[in-house]
Length: 137
Image (cartoon, rainbow, N blue to C red; front, side):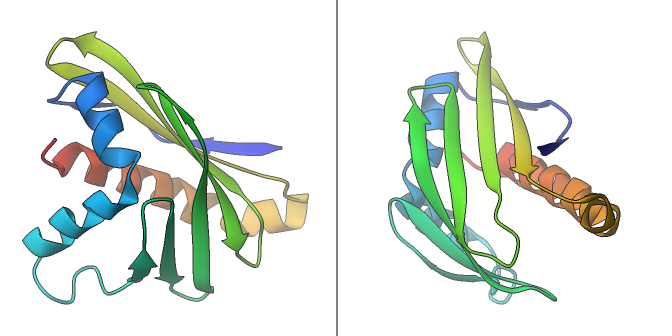
């Protein structure tokens, strides 16, 4: 399995607060209300357990939460994707008011496909981990 990991980022909120916000995807509505129109057009739909996005050059991808480990990890699996993959959001405490986050994508990739998607996957995990640091928890 190929794993692509983001750098570890710091979030100014407790591990529990971050987990509680991210483990219910209905909380995306708060984020969407804060972002100027057009900036999150790639998000097509979401509910508490899944999100469907329109990925440029790929089409619709649906991610479903398949595992929640309280306060430490949220694991997603792709349902609609040309390339099946998993995504993990891992959380660790730093202090009572600060935590760390790392995003990982795991997929079974042959060497040819891996060479083609390595950079876009690296960019995706970094963008997602950066976005997670900007949310108000």
